[in-house]
Image (cartoon, rainbow, N blue to C red; front, side, top):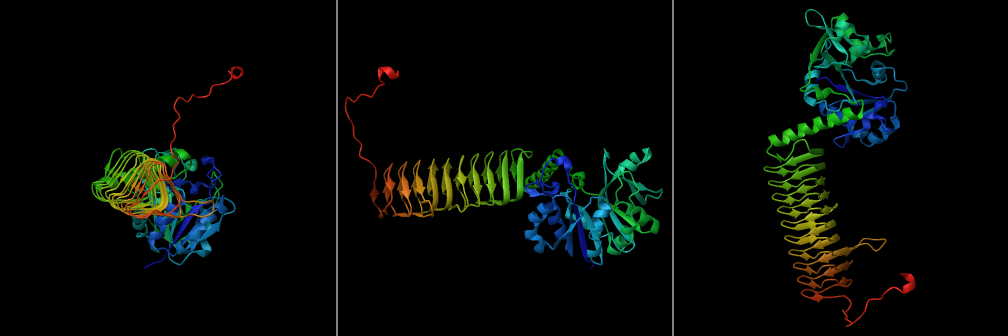
Amino acid sequence: MMSLDVVILAAGQGTRMRSRRPKVLHPLAGKPMVRHVIDTAVTLDTNHLHLVIGHGGDQLRQALEGDADRLRLRFALQEEQKGTGHAVAQVLDKLGPDKVLVLYGDVPLIRRETLVSLLEEVDEGHMALLTVTLDNPSGYGRIVRDTQGRVIAIVEQKDASQDQLGIRECNTGIMAMTSTQLKRWLPRLSADNAQGEYYLTDVIAMAAQEGVGIATAQPATPSEVEGVNNRAQLAALERAYQQEIAERLMVEGVALADPTRLDVRGSLHCERDVEIDVGCVFEGEVELGEGVRIGPYCVIRQSHIGAGSVVESHSIIEHSVAAGHNHIGPFARLRPGTHLAAKAKVGNFVETKNVQVGEASKINHLSYVGDATLGRDVNIGAGTITCNYDGANKHRTELGDGVFIGSNSALVAPVSIGSGATIGAGSTISKDVADNTLAVSRARQTSKNGWSRPTKAAQDQ
């Protein structure tokens, strides 16, 4: 089996993005475009990935160096942008002995299956070229074939004749060949063209002249090979990507209220009969159990929602686990470290953080519960706060089974409330409470009959 080196071109400035950020670092589905390309390339069992950088190279290194060793990623600097052929030349002496695949950091939706079929065509007698047939080929290089249908050249639009401009089969720029072929052809490139650049596509004509076969393949959809030059094109690819995810989810049995209003920025795994309303965003790895219902405009990040649970509208859940048959929201915020046991409820305008909520316990509304452990069948009244931070350190609140916390209470951590205990509404609890005890800590109410409210003096009116 031949080894493979992948060259990813990512040196362009991307001026039409009108951004200080390098074009290939702009996110699609929550991940930089170039990372989509890298993640696809590593599935091909590569020898090395060679990323050719230029404008914004320091930002690219900073964004990717943390994973460089794991991905076997090497950086190569193209100090002057003199075309795609010149870019590939920067890694020519670092390539392995077998196959080479050329990809582009601003073509993020290329699929592994397409690349596998392309690479299967490559040997010392053949190279492979990915083409696409477009209704509107404007801006693309055209594939020129002879009378037998064999590819003999690629002509860039600015260099094309009127007849050639009518060709609808276009160059995607993605190609594969052997290292020997590339090292033979690349030094012979010329910049004698309208742009004054070294076009990698000129190797096609060299291959044809040598009698090397040029195999072609096409992607499943044109969006797979579309590049990004401006924010409008990026937005269009975002919707194409999200539409593909939506269609897959529906095939798997997920009910989407509107497939055009779904955003998955990571991976979303759903069991049967999941329902997702409009405007929801899923980030990182999210799992939804059987029969889960997600209301409109929720954000769920790196979390698991167990079977039979309901998440009402406008709730935010991050790095949390709901065991199953839970009710969350509306307008709830589950911060990292929240773990809901089965049948636990977190209601409207409730915020939790680093908390374990026991089975069938309820935090119904307008409360903050952080750094706490709640037993079974606990009831937290409205307006309750766990005072977990002393200005320097966090402290925990422990509530036993069956605890009842009256509304508008403050639990000053560290504090423990025993099983079956009741806290009277409006209390501030700073000392431990024993099992089955009523604790009340508030000022005694007084009343003054016939009391008159003060009025302003005449000169102040």
